[in-house]
Length: 316
Image (cartoon, rainbow, N blue to C red):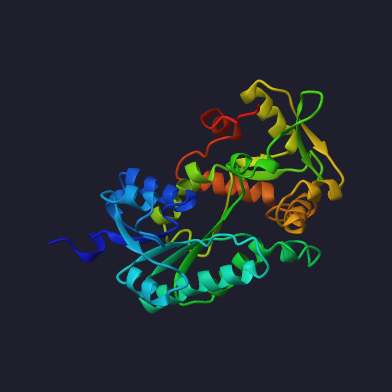
């Protein structure tokens, strides 16, 4: 009979119907080694959603809601490893709500004797900027949760994704806007020469999480600053010009103008971009941290050009 160490370990995946969780799920299922090592339990708030239904037959799908502790206790019973993530809440107090959600998952994981948590989080902009920028609640809530998880009696590793390439599709005001002269303009209040890390979150999250799942002891306590590379806005505009056949240019605008173009949380977004320009998205060593993550990923992450070829921008 097989020893228990050869039995597949149950991997709980939060956000299994979203970009990151689905990427982890698909990656593990399609990886010859990881698909033998782990049995996936997809955790979703709504079992009746179309996305949840599409997972049935591929993996075990269970209901779990961070606001309902009993549901988490049930969902995490018998789990070995947890991929945890929390959705950003762009509202006052959003960071604290995210912290509470992550803490609930982590506390129940420990209570149910899980052995490993991989948490999708973000750096603390307040810390990186020495207290200069404090409005980026979606970063601070996650960073506070990471500090909490690091103090728990469970092994852990962390995933800090860069700017989602998908944002150019999902958040229209961040995409190029047509100017009166027919050109398309990517307008930011930050320098078009400031580098920012980019990731195809839906396509590549699994490559970084997969590395941790393959060698959990090696990456225990480590953080993957997950991006394919850093791009300046000028480089982004050039890639968009090549992939769309339209002329896309990067333009620096006054901060007040940028905020006016931002339909929600303008201060939060302005601070996030300003801090990245001044201190680096991951701090002063962003370039080396991204290079380390790429080198250790389980598979090569897509470039921005490859992403925009696969998911073309519709510039009309």
